[in-house]
Length: 322
Image (cartoon, helix red, strand yellow):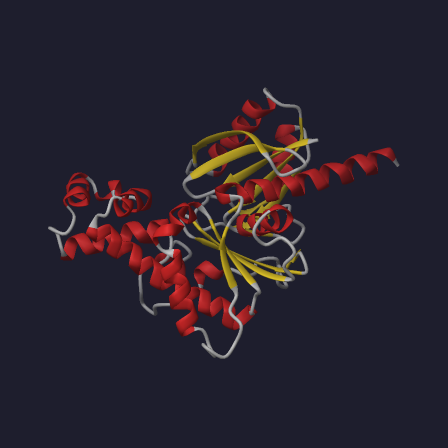
């Protein structure tokens, strides 16, 4: 049985056909539209493209936002247009097949627990670093959702009172200092203070500061650009501080670092581990969590939510046979 998992992020809509072993067989990607109806049209177009090449039975949507406990509606998504929206029912009617929703970080954590870096862990946390930060907690393989289905929203822990404004409405959130967006912001701020520190990034910023994306900064850091390396070091420090907070609250045995920024993990993860180990409460007198990159990479959310869609399709088929 093949299903489609779709990662609905603030920057792009990425869809993949996934088999029962967690392998991604085919993919498509498009920019994330700004309105609810255009977004749902983009999702439908992605499904139509993949369903034209594969026989699929259900769809899962991994959403960067608050999803209700029944996984049918999106309450709020800081980087998307949905507000109190019955997305699963609308998309199921549009697509003619079962649709399930899940928070994108929960979906990634489930994928990693079933097939990847968190396999077998009793207490596992996932920190998905992309446009923002998504967080998830698994207890004995089950997602911890909190009383209303919105926990744990780690990216919006306030780490700098009065700090950088966040689309969630607060300021100083962790994801404003530790994400792809944060990497870009930090690089532009450093360029303003040290315009001669990076010829390449300075030239791009002079044309349009939006050209200095997190991906571009990471590329420059891999090439040895001094200013980009400073921005990456800043991200590593904030990641270590945030992981210490996660460990203080949840005491996980493993933390999986995923999301698009994790593709650049060799540039920052060792420094983040050292920072975490030095600032966690009881440093030197407690076991430390294993901090691992997502084995499924940027496909973890797609695999996890496609697996949930497969479970939903199985349940729907069983009910239909009764």
